[in-house]
Amino acid sequence: MYLTKEEEKMLDSDNETLRKCMEILVAVGETNDAERLVEITSAHISGVSYDNIGEAGLEWLESLEGKVKVPATVNPAGMDLKKWMEMGISEDFYEKQMRVLRVFEKLGVELALTCTPYYLSRPKYGEHIAWAESSAIVYANSIIGARTNRECGPCALAAAIVGKTPYYGLHVKENRAPTITVKIKGDLAAAGYIGGEELKNEIPYFVFDREVPEYELKLLGAALAASGNTAMFHAEGITPEWKDFEKPSEKIEIVGELRTECEPDLITIGCPHTSKEELELILKLLKGRKVRKEFWIFTSRKISGESSDLVEKLESLGVKVFNDTCMVVSPATQRFECIMVNSGKAFNYLPLMRKVEVTFGDLKTCVEKAVKG
Image (cartoon, rainbow, N blue to C red; front, side, top):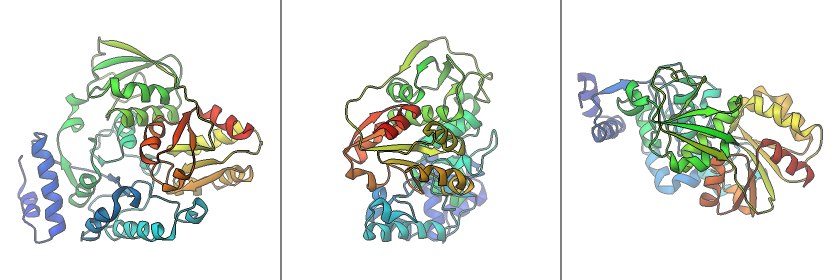
């Protein structure tokens, strides 16, 4: 892989952190036959919850010295920083989680604590970025038209500190071409979960039988990335590049429908984090009715702050709105037996990470279940 003189100096730097970060990027680049590094405009780092990284990950983070060179944000933590006691988080977990966050703060990373960084600052079409949250990666490539590979947490952090990432994969225009045409019917989040395995290593070209709102596309991409490893799709009439390539001749159909049995003792929305529009829709669906079951909504602190009137109205109806975390990365949800979600991503990860049963419903179904008990 070709390195500029400046990049070679970083690879031989006396700063151990900078040197290690360059070693990570060069290793990734050479493994994937990247011809060079490319400058990025932003980075988004995953693996922030102490529950995910543990003591070994915390020790590695605390060994780092330096500052990020580009705007960088981080994924959800394992708790709401203000309502952690209300969530049932232990003081020991709180202290260790805060140690993790202090490291990122010291490095100059914005503590956005969200899986939807595009609601905070939206990259531009064609910009190279290094994002490590799978659902955000799909969104950036497919809805915005920015360019990122499916980075790991340490790789995204290394890219943020260096300001560059290896130029291969989805950073290269011709590698972004769709490979299979997929007609989708039914619930998009369910279809993403079902299709993830079948569409692994594919870039699907989606055709819908109805007009699809943005939040459903977000749920579709998140589910595809969770159950498979999809990093991009083309949606007819939506993806900025949908006309740039030939429509694939191979065609399949996926019907989004998931059937599950358990009776939920918790209903959760916000994987990925909800937008202001989703908060408005949930409030509209509630129709002034109070909830009778535990109903948790997860969003970023920025969205929650910009939508304080919506949050107040939702909470007056018994809904709990949490920031900074989500049902998957927080240990708070593992005390429940069955959790209802409208997210294919959460449907995939909750049984694996929280060891709970999970049931599925679209947004309207989830709201009705919360109200009727």
